Length: 180
Image (cartoon, rainbow, N blue to C red; front, side, top):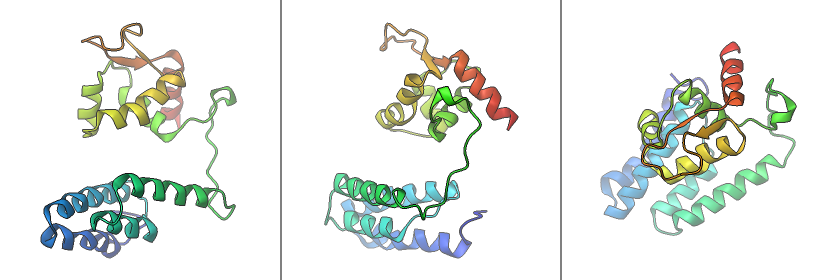
């Protein structure tokens, strides 16, 4: 099921947090479940999580650090890892240079919208997400700023029937992704 992780390793990652879920205080249970889901989503994408992430998660679950502190620690850890040439080089994408970097989040959003017009609520439901602010911050706004997505009512961002659709550039990206 997961090409980069054995089934046993995958189970162990879940078991690490099960003890908190079964035996912890209510706040620990809630934090442990959130971390378990986040790590599970990484595994679904075929990504391994570092031991550092697990240690930081445990500190948060046990109440030693806040979620904001955990986020900053993890962010700085991975940024320091990116600066070293020992990391695996990314395969360059075959998009026009004038587009700049096309992120995986932008590709995912373009693929999800396709030829439809979708509201934020419809997109959240389609992806099984709940956090509107993170979705808008991490997916929608960058795609709009890069010119791949546009609002149906650009002058009225809070329009009750606001939906989002691909621009001509977004349609070209969708076509290029389908050809790969």
